Image (cartoon, rainbow, N blue to C red):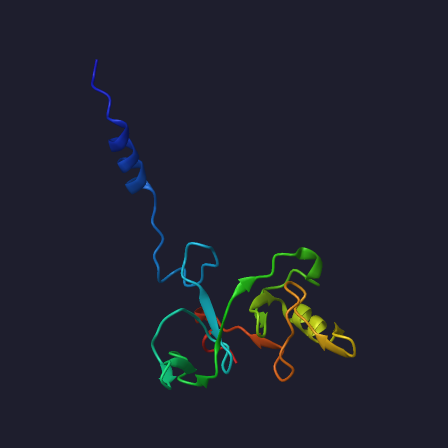
Length: 156
């Protein structure tokens, strides 16, 4: 009878037998164990979190502006992208090409347009549009941002 391979050796062979994805082919992964992806507010480009192009001023060295590495436009801040998981708030099943500002929940163009036009009661005497996924107040001047992923850099 031939000797059986030890369990550790079988697991090692099985691990290396699996196909590994190339990092440059999968530029956006929205899962817990990957680096978070952020969108630049001024241009809409989506990048992974990095320290390149971050301007820091003052004694506490807080970031004051962020320069997009693709188009070199400065943004006042970046927003971390989050999947809007509640299907009842989505108006259609189109591509998630937009996100709410400032929370970063991703949705389709019809969903962000609809929810950014619906003012909900805030406090005792005011109405403001909110993100349907987390109920955070949307920015009044730019309630949503169009996302430009790396495979759509040259789309206008």
